[in-house]
Image (cartoon, rainbow, N blue to C red):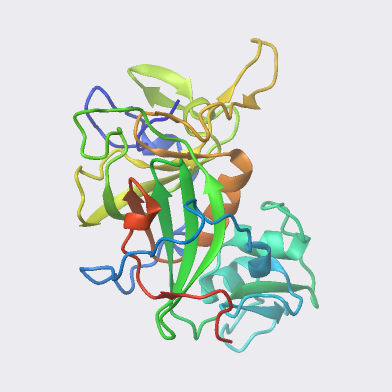
Length: 312
């Protein structure tokens, strides 16, 4: 099951939920308004010998402090005294703001594993942040036919594009009236800043009923913001979120329901597993991010030149 954007009034086919029920997230944790993509995205991705979406995972190279880390990040050592903050000690949140890197991202790098909430830090702790001298954007290439999503970064200075990871996703149900053949619209969209984190017990209004938000959106929500190119539908109500959670019995704790991942079963939004959604969320919420939705990834028009090894 999927749904639409919290806090927006939409048609009866879309879920209506109040943003006021979502935990407050500061602007420093949300997408930054910087450089927009050009009106045309560039050349189509050429077909290769294997006619399937490339399967790769390099996200660990964003978080590792070792020599294999990617050139868009750097390792810093925590100190309460920093030249860019005067009058008081620097906290982890200050580092997040200064380096335009989410606290979730820093936490995973600190912990050396996908733990996005434990943020224990002391002088001398080393962790990764995004480099301030790098201008980057993220792109999510959604293939509706294969139910796959490629996660790329584009270096605006070197014009290089690197595939970071391929995710299996849930997409919209079949819709013969739509140009996409799906409830998920074709086009290019920027991601918005009205993000949300949900946990068991947080409630909102959906379909005129009070519901537990995690049972609709999973633990994370990122809305579509603006239609950039070739868009066949309005952005309102669409987004990327986690798979819904269910209660096996009324007395049980909720568990993730991933049955729609890899299938055409959502109401139009893009679904990821809990683990994948929390990872993606930690990386993209402080950088400009765009979603490119196509029927077949070979049809995608992507910026930059794809490389296997980025320039350092």
